[in-house]
Length: 85
Image (cartoon, rainbow, N blue to C red; front, top):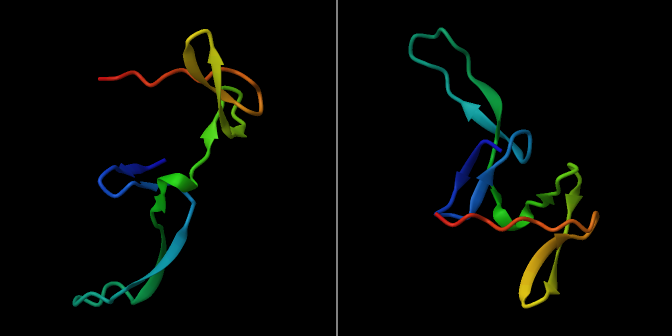
């Protein structure tokens, strides 16, 4: 992941959502007009979580005792809670 845009709920991920951007020629005529490829942002909801083994997974919720835990549906391991600042 390259960058997180929290105000727009979007992510810039490396080699995902590649677009072509047309670049103009400069005044000095040292560079030519061309089209360059670059990454575009994707919405946060289109990103999947990766578990501890490196596999992409969906998230489930499980009640153990009086607490609610999130767990990985592929491996069954508990997902640690986010640390609040």
